[in-house]
Amino acid sequence: MFSHILQSDQSIPTPNEAKLAALTAGPRDSWSIARSTFFSTGVNRASLDVIEKAAFFLSLDDEQLDVDLESSPGWSYLGKNFLTGNCYNRWFDKSFTLIVLPDGTVGFNVEHSWGDAPIMGHAAELVSAYEFKGIQNQLPGEHYAENGSCDGPIIERVLPTRLRWDITPQCTETIQSSYGVARALADTIDLVVVRFLDFGSGYIKRQGFSPDAFVQMALQLAYLTDRSSLPLVYESSMTRLFREGRTETVRSCTAESAKFVQSMMDKSSRPEDRIRQFRLATDYHQHLTRDAVSGKGVDRHLFALYIMSKFLRLDSPFLKKILSEPWRLSTSQTATSQSGKIDLAPNHPDAHRCLGGGFGPVDKNGYGVSYIFSMETALCFHVSSCFTCPDTSSTRFANTLVESMRSIRKMIESASCETLANTPSKC
Image (cartoon, rainbow, N blue to C red; front, side):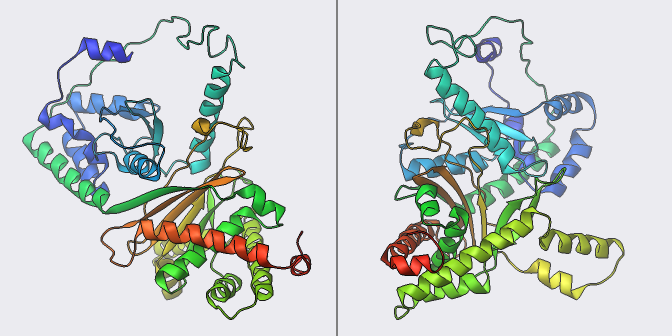
């Protein structure tokens, strides 16, 4: 199919249509007006209709890579590229854009309104698992031929046709304006991706702690170290126990977690007191998580009340205050092992492990952190912030987070068996 595209039409896009997709990256109001003004009739409507009825958008990037994709700078480049692209080679309105780089590296850009990260993570996990098993000849005749090729049988397929557009000078101005806004926003995103190889979920569980709660405590310790204060912390939690369930918020920064991270900063505090407070904080975090996934969270309830107040034109100072507080630390764990086909054990090849995904900071003066337990002995962190904020640095926070993870492990290992047993836990 790709060969057909190259052979059938070798003309380059006109200047007016080259950055057309930037309309989906700019302000939503501007795109809405442009749709009704320039894309409601004729060839433009027909071409837009083809895109919007497609299952997904495919971007075949042609930019040659000059980074080492087996290093943090390389992973950070991939993360930023998949998140923003060049602001006109992603169709941000689509459910997802499948992105293929010149070397065969694949990623997604996902529009959030229709679904959440576990859905695309599940799909990516299946693809990776089938690829790995196919290479290992565990699926002969199903995905790979005996000679190792994946050409598959020749079938009759609908060949692609080039979409035609009638871009007026006024439409071109709108495209350029949207591109300028999107480019400025993309340029402010400071995204860093790091792999943490010291330990992973296996070690944490052997110590009797929740891996997610462990990371949440490390995040708060890192933030306190980085900013000398504790923020309002957002952690996304799934409500998939319910039909059409989406997410609920776990407000991870609690009185218990605050006491723990402050004890870690207090050089005079005893290891026994730290580990005891750590146990209280992680246990309470698990309690909040269980409440969130079982429909007992508070944030979606408050948001529904706010929507009702707007509909009924009732002023609610309390709801305005609560829902306007900035999430200076917004976090999310990327689910893994959903398919049952990816082994978290260390013997599964790194090439078939997902680095997870990320997002921009929710607050321009804060951080966005996504993390994935890619294997039992490792994690991957995506840290984002804004270059425009003089008080944040994704690189600095990522490094601080790594040290916080190590500090908590050192605290656990320095505590006596008796202290761990009394928290209670296993020694």
